[in-house]
Image (cartoon, rainbow, N blue to C red; front, side):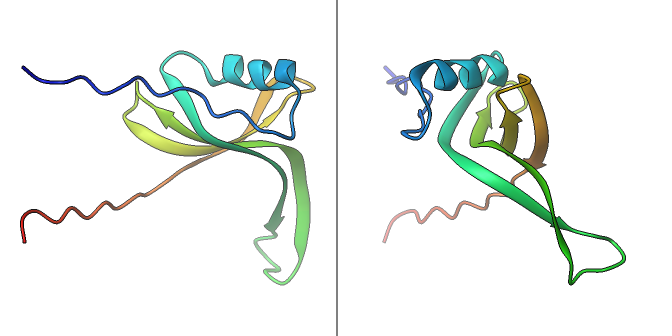
Amino acid sequence: MSQQRPKATNKASLLLLNDENEALFTLLGKGCVTLATGIVQLYLSDLQDNYRWNKRCCGVAAFVKDNTKRSYYIRVFDLKVSDELVEDKSSITVYIKVGN
């Protein structure tokens, strides 16, 4: 008999109000769970000038496990307009050691 893993639950940010955390969890959509959540200011460099950084947005960043796509993402949301601003697919390498 195989044991089932406990279902993952969303990790709320201590810096957000309860209704803001709930709004974020709603924006994630079905099959997605946030494993970590925080407040961010996102800066990106220009293509022509890699020495200059421009503020792209402020919002809530979430490390998201998307069960429907079987992938992990870092997503940045603007809760004021209820929209996703940025998504970056994470490349995660897991090494498993079996035996001695």
